[in-house]
Amino acid sequence: MATVYDRTEMLLGKDAMGRIKMKKVIIFGIGGVGGFVAEALARVGIGTIGIVDYDQVDVTNINRQIIALHSTIGKHKTLIMKERIKDINPNIRVDDYAEKLTEVNLESFFPKKWDYIVDAIDDVPAKLLLIQEVSRRGISIISSMGTGNHYDPGSFKIADIKKTHTCPLAKRIRKETAKMDIKELKVLFSTEKPYREISPETGNFSPASIAFAPATAGLMIAAEVVHDLIEQK
Image (cartoon, rainbow, N blue to C red; front, side, top):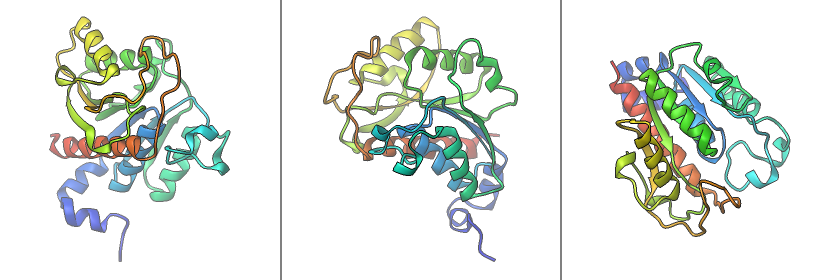
């Protein structure tokens, strides 16, 4: 009898699929990047997926976010994403948190041992808070740098934060993580010069966006997570 993951198992193998099913991944930020991460991880067969986002769908999200439709405007992103994941595979456990990450509620996101963390947060202070906490806990993490103001999906690369360049957000995170004495941080960043400048410190205006840039970034991150999880002992 055919199953959801038959074609994936043909590619990855039965042993790898068994390991993936046992893994727990939490995604902070279910927007243009994080939504595609969650989508891909569900379709690959991750057994437990955590999703964190306090926001609701807005009409301006429709150009790039997989959960954003006219029918979902005004609904919580975590609720829509949870329903979508369950529609892909009802057996996936989904832990949804419709709240913003802060110093006050930080501990509440770690009631279990996550195998991997995906940081797709736009807010710089929250992003740094998560990176520092995950580093302290010794959990694998990949952090998305800026995907707004970018047009070329082929410009995205995955590297350690120390090897990033061009991206204004990566420059800020590189500086701050050095202060925190964080030795390594895997990130996705763009080598393309932003079409519009925006200050990561002040966030003076919303970045421009297009459908295929954050989608590509999210799928690349998901692929990296799956690769790393298969290699995990």
